[in-house]
Amino acid sequence: MSERLKVRLAYQRGFQVVDGSSVLETFAERDDAFSFVLGKGARVWLAWSRTMIGGQSPPFDFTASFQQDAVGRILKAVSGPGAGTWFWTCYDGGARGTVATKEEAVMGVERAYTRRLVGADLPR
Image (cartoon, rainbow, N blue to C red; front, side, top):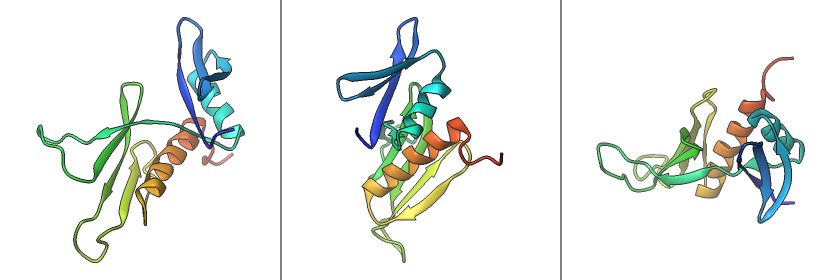
């Protein structure tokens, strides 16, 4: 089992959770698919691309999306006291942090978005 699982549309059947080329499970609702991923101790594998601002792509700046929705962002500090560190933020819920590596920043956004969609951090 991978630490990152893909959730994709399953034509007219809802959403599939995929590990590599293997379909693990199909769900009618997106939130159920995300709950399954979280229950496996994994996080949803988001799509990553360069951030575009005014037609320009700043260095060390990436946007995460799920389907067509932008859900988070990571960027590297290139100057100042935090130079070399990575900042991450998940738009939904406002989770954010500063970490040492790009991989940790990616993990922060993917984990926060997965947990947010299933309400894992909400009071019960």
